[in-house]
Length: 276
Ligand SMILES: [Mg+2]
Image (cartoon, rainbow, N blue to C red):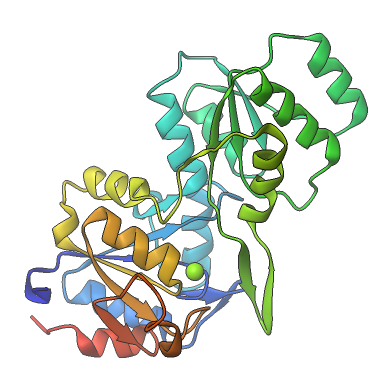
């Protein structure tokens, strides 16, 4: 890998830049240094619970100035992916409403949500069901929501998942992630969703394409080997594992996905990169 030709660094958020909305020590400073060296910094997250603009605003409020166009997340990527394939105004059932609905609306589509028994009754009465189901994360997930996704999938709706992450990191451990929720619909419908998030290469490709760059110009940085490192490799980029999130050095030998670089944290990673 020739790191002298590097033009962009694509950072995962959870476990790399912050943990439970608290900045990881040294992250802001390291990002400043990368930018000062002329590297374009992007933030690529499997999180679909907010819009791309909200992630940008949150990072800025945390002391990392960030434009909307520097963020790529699964709610935006799913909406853009579908917006390019479905007619304007197409109804899309959204499982995990938070960031998806506004991004779908911005892409010209009509998000449909169901939470209660009464809403499910009305949804059934207003057939045909939406021809597309997008599944992501929802802390208020109800059985009726699963029912609405299930019946549409049973009728052949297109099935999209924002990510398959089984868990997400919190201080002292993990909690059930999007993948564990998506799995419920997979099991009942016996359908396999198209994956938008990492380890699929879609988000890296979309962001680099927007910037007019190629995967070979980029270093993908993450804390999970089977998600970030696998995704970066699938996209054809260089990869770096940082040890501030889930995977540790001891996990590398038994993983199929080997990073090109390993660093304790972002400041240590900056020290590994060549200075211009
Ligand atoms: Mg992470």
